Image (cartoon, rainbow, N blue to C red):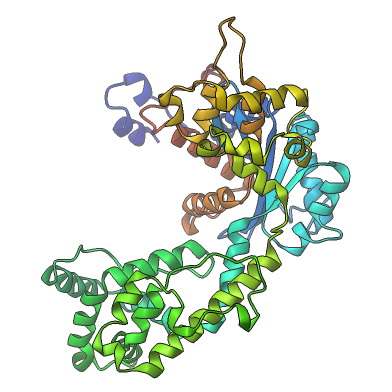
Length: 500
């Protein structure tokens, strides 16, 4: 530790003299983590917040429940997301062991009570669609609805759309996804192959980008991997056509075959379409095959002779794509409550809409909107309505209109009339609290990546308290830009003083 301090603090004799071993270092890390967590808890005691949860298993096979919170910090005027607690689901020292809906619910409520966080401040909840979390009976959400009436509960839209796509993609050829994975595997562990691909990229004046991995448990990675293969399509064709005869590997044959198949390029280029309000399975609602829109790039390719002469292949692509869109629409209607008026009304908070007169005709009052999220707003509904109806007739500076949506409502809440009275304070608070509702649990997914970087095979003895402390410290430093900009608070300085 002494040698490390000398290299880290070459300009400070005091810092260079610092010395500690594993036990003291662990205790110091936990104490700093507790200081940061206490800051978060103090915010939750005075602000409305939502809870976001997910479960993960680390490299030591420890299954954790992550409890995140999302809220608008009234003091800092920022929307924030932070880790509140990591809990070992199978910790034998706890009364509740296992990931049943009852146990997970109790872990969440007990955590809030342990920190003395008012439960009335809880306004939203988001998680994936697992049965123990979002099931109709004996789940976390069923208990939350019973104990916290009016709580806004979201099933993660990212997980739901991923499931919709996973079901719909069964109607597309499997070899498209196989190609993406096979190409990555071919280059993954060979420096020579990566170098030879780079030569092909240089020859074709393409950017020397790496081939990306399409992770099976991270849905966003597949899109990025497909985009990268499309970007490097010509370089890949050049590379594999050159090595086909040289290496004579069985693993290369399906890649070469797919790269030579003109339909593969079409599949990867296909655009997305919006869901329609009518029954997508009715044949009378289907467009003729030759009018199915698959994107401008596909349309351009279909004009080429190479595709024009192969009518059977083109019709197969169009038929499968139409079937994909039909199944996607069906899955979206199945997994999403399209009749939920909350999403319709929330769309009126968009900056472009909220400043126009037309929305007042479509939504003359915010009464129903407020009633759809009863835990959000506890003020006078007429005051809220007055501010809503007066907004389009009030001059709003251009610099406010060009802000992000969070900054827009922050600055809107600070506008005063000639008598110095805040004109839109209620509307601002209502909108910011609505924006703090979580529609996805991707914050937890991002945390899992950080946990995997912190707790590795070489550091697999890290226990939950130390892991949580390291995570919240990392997030705190990241939130301030970098470690160079980080300024310890007075409680942190006092905490360090206790370890002299």
